[in-house]
Image 1 (cartoon, helix red, strand yellow):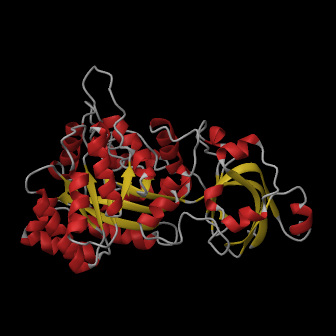
Image 2 (image 1 turned 60 degrees about the vertical axis):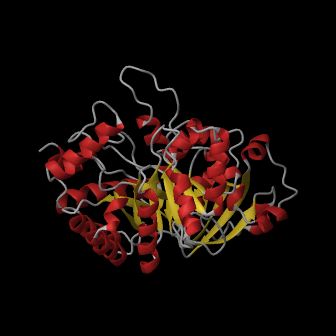
Image 3 (image 1 turned 135 degrees about the horizontal axis):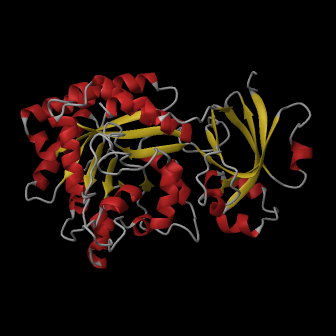
Length: 449
């Protein structure tokens, strides 16, 4: 059966933050239910033509009969289902993914995770081309089926590994370019960039169109290391992406030091910092000073609620005392762009996950209290990460935009976040795709050898 190139999706609900204000103004006389008012959802119909959103019509009592040519065009009835743009995943680790059974982290600690990755990658030399390619593509298959359009992955880059990893990344980026926009960030210790090999490595990152990044540790040399990586990024016109403060030590303030370095060196390209967990255990004055600097430096922050809740404050045979996540509400209130992302998936850092940004948003809303009201927090897995990735065509719903949409049967946020929504419909260029997930058995020969 040929997919229609021109049709309507009627009776859907889209979060207000994705609807142009002029369209909402046209609908001032709409009588909204308490659910629509509380959840800030806009009832409307979408015209899809040649893969684009051709028009958005408020769902008034007479809109179908007066404004939609129902007799001549096919109609998809959303039955008041909630619709969002396709997702953007700002912080992942595709190269680590799906090795849990091969290298489990049985004590669940951060140190146990580091040892597990080192054992799998370096000691056992598992990360050969085929192994990396198939595991990373498995993650892409999951992401695509769930409705993700863009992914930024951090890539572990020990000297023996990075050439193979970069080659796999290039191949997958090219293969998947029509489905998922794929970005890469180097993941190394920042001291590496002070060496001659580190400068050559920065050239390799630039060659694949990646971002410079690494792990910021609270050490006396950090200012010097930050100055060096900023210089390398400026020379190569690259953006920066750091792992910062992934711990519960109030004295760990690498997020602040990154923001200060960005301001000191007048670095104008986009910078993102992930985790930022220790911000939540600092006194209010210290935290607020850091937040103000982060906003001034235009640094984006990405919270990884699932992985950080799982790893942080883990002590054997003791219940964790805190949730492990950063101050997302306070950062957002200060004007900082805050995103939520998936981080690790079925590896020693996080033994669960399925590359599903709806799951990330669901868990984030519960862990970080992003409900009552939900406000615009759905942007944290759509338009905000897309903006931080420099992608103007991702995470939006608008006339003239690609019809890359995710439609749920859920009619409200409560319904959306109460079930896994595996029956969602994902539209890419206006066409509903196959959302069948890959079978775990695809990787059995790699994992159970």
